[in-house]
Amino acid sequence: MGADAAVHVAGTLKALGDPLRLRMLSLLAASPTGEACVCDLATVAEVSQPTVSHHLKLLKEVGLLTSERRGTWVYYRVQPALRGAVTTLLDSFAPAAADAADAVPPAGLTDAEDALARIARRLASAFPDRDPGAVLSVVRESYTGLARSSAVASQLVGNAERFARQRLTDTARPAGAGPQVLFVCVANAGRSQLAAALLRHHAGDAVTVRSAGSAPAADVHAAVRPLLAELGADGEAFPKPLTDDAVRAADVVITMGCGDTCPVLPGKRYEDWVVGDPALASDTGVRAIRDEIDRRVRALLADLLPDLTLPAA
Image 1: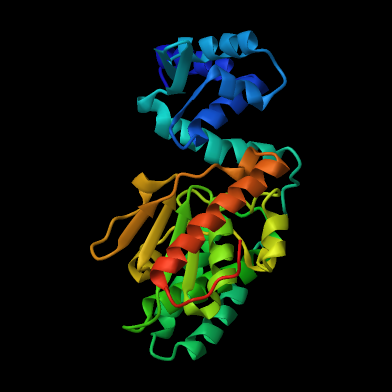
Image 2: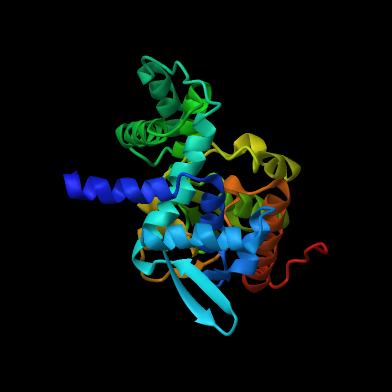
């Protein structure tokens, strides 16, 4: 990084070095309309509107926000050219930094090759039409993909087996099988996990459900785990990287804040759901996000399986 660029980036990061400004930026990024006025942003903390205006002015001065006056109110939004960078900050870096404050680095496995070979033998028996060498490659790739980000070393081998089995199942998916839905967000630690769990809860085996992340987090967000546990999905939830196999196997691909990174293949139905990120939300906020995702999941199921009877919300 050059000196001039470093000075500019340091100034931007300095402007973000305040918890209230970060929370206001998060609210703007998560807004369904992409914007908010001072009166909306004042709700994130018990501060006066002039204080909010001061913080917004600082964020605007470093180029993070733009503003537009309409009548008596000024509306703010994230600078369009920086929206991708802000999304990465809030969806990937911020949750990882928050989790790292309490995380203890795991010891990990020094040599997983024997365990991976045993997994490959089991899966080769379960998929007899696949070449055993190819199965071993999928297992190794799955382990490596998870190891890049996973913070739970004790679960890494078991999760690698689940991930490899899922990938092998997807590549062997028969024609005419029931609908398959893939939920993709950035970290695969909150929104996409909740959506997948809700769809499984409502549809059971009638729909095959997958979730993945364009930049998987180390673990599922702590605030989301209780909601997954209520749906009976906490034990099976772990962040997974997005693969082309998962996209190819899906009939419907739902992106949630990462649409630009998801490969677009012909013959697939794509939707982008603009919902808040639970990573740094309050308990009330996380449940509100869960309810919004549930509403969307029910609407999707009503379209995919119109004869399926769902319980009242």
